[in-house]
Length: 309
Ligand code: UDP
Ligand code: MG
Image (tube, rainbow, N blue to C red; front, top):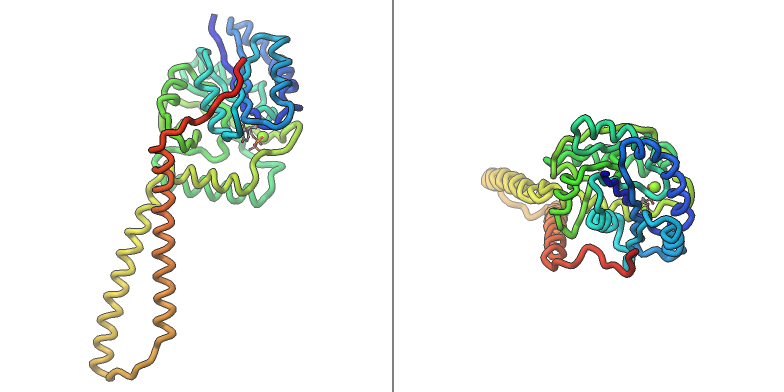
């Protein structure tokens, strides 16, 4: 008998916890046919509401339900990592508590796994119900990542993904503190089948991602999976040297021919501020990478548990 571990990161999802359980169980007939058992791991990411008691109640009722509760909010990435670490299944799937990852897709996902794929991932082809500004920036992010990163990062990819134990173990090998799972999946490789579906709006509660949080997360993605921004500094440096060289020749020649009436300090001020701006910008980029390195060398744990059932 094989085991499927379902990882559900939850942050203030008291309404969705029981609802998810019900909806998931409705879609498990095919698992029985395939002789696969399942366990549901709710990873409570330091919720302040009744998420933990709700999971406890489910655990009383059904011992296939497990809880890992964090000591505070560590973020969804940490929750997913904890889930992968605690999972025991031969297959592992990560699903959002808000049912934005439709459980009915699982059956199809398993079909591809049987065909020999190591993982089946999903991406949404529409972003219906999302603020337009957010969709716009998300598109820009993925387009940019395609150019500056060697690792493939799919536009609209969700964290909803079914994997074999082998792939889960590969992901667990990557113990970095600054986690960007969408890139990690690409990095570890393996055969991945992509399924597409229309965006589903969350059933209850509100999204936990503010625009600001998403922006910081995208920076995480860039610094974690590309070093191209670092070369921007060198490229700009070379360009400005060239420009300065041309200007020097121009000014020397002009002075030799027309003499040197002192003028032009406004242009000087403009040039100085431009170049110091560029320098600060480049230093900022380097600072970003340095900060990540700093956090990384501290080797802090990715999450801390308070309770486990
Ligand atoms: N989540 C989490 N920790 C966080 C933020 C979110 O575990 O700090 C969980 C959340 O409970 C949900 C999933 O991650 O199950 C996706 O979050 P959400 O639905 O808010 O994001 P969206 O679907 O809007 O991208
Ligand atoms: Mg959601």
